[in-house]
Image (cartoon, rainbow, N blue to C red; front, top):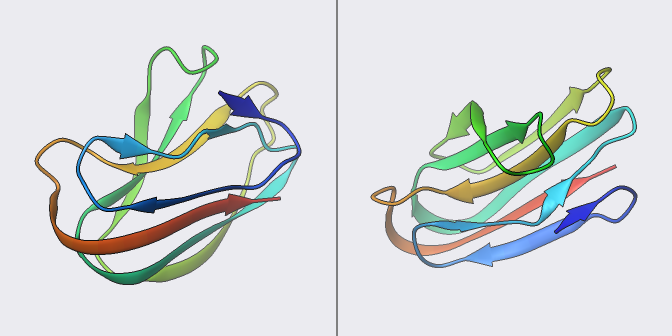
Length: 95
């Protein structure tokens, strides 16, 4: 699923779990909180969510802001297979 205006949030407690996609209009925020041991990836797709490319990754809580000038790009946050150890990571993308 891809959202254009709605924020996307997800509690992640396992590997291979991602938020819905967010198609930002311009600036968007990344928030990762919780008590967790894992690697959370910000990924983007240029084809509506069929193929994903890693943009950045984190192993600690973070608040960050990004700017997307290219129309149609979709972003998501998640933990890949093999990247989760324990806890709950609360991840969010917001406009």
